[in-house]
Amino acid sequence: MKKYIFLIAGVLSFTQAQEYKSVFDCSSNNARFVMTRMNLIERTMNMIEKDGDKANFAITLHGGCVPMVSDVYDEITPEEDMPYIKMAQESIIRLSQTKKVKIIVCAMSLNAHAIDKKEVLPFIHISKNSFIDTIGLQNKGYALMTFK
Image (cartoon, rainbow, N blue to C red):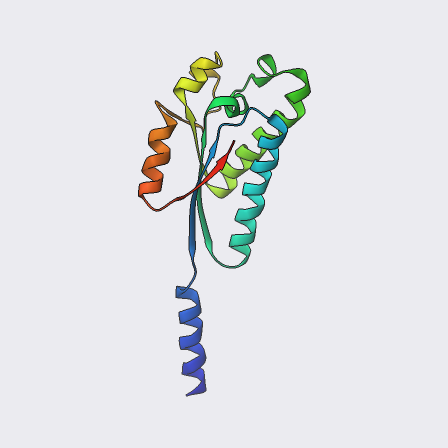
C-alpha cells in the first residue's frame, strides 16, 4: 500500500508542474540596461526550469532594442554601447538556440534604424508590427514584462 501512495504522490507532483508564459517587450535605447535584462531573462528561465517547471518565453524588440538583432551592429552602434550590444546579442542567441525563446523584431523599427532585413540574424522573426505580436501573446495568456 505504501508503494502505491508514493507512486500516486510522485505522479501528482509531476502533473503539478507549472508553465510560466511571458512576453518581454523591449524598447529601451540604454544598451547596458538591455544587456542586463537579457541576462535576467536567461537567469529567470534557469531558475524556473531548475524547480521542475516550464518557461515559455518570447521577446519582442522595437525602438532602441533593435541593433542587437543585426549581424552588423558594429556599424550602427555608438562605440560606448558596443560591449553591451555584443553581450545582449550573445544572450538572445543562447535564449533562442538553447531555451527556444521566440525573438521577434519590429520591421518598422528596423526601418527606423536603417537595418536591412538581410542583416537580421537568421533565427529572429521579423514582424510587420511587434505590438500586434505582443497583444496576440497576451491574448494567449502570456504575462507582459516591459523594458523601457
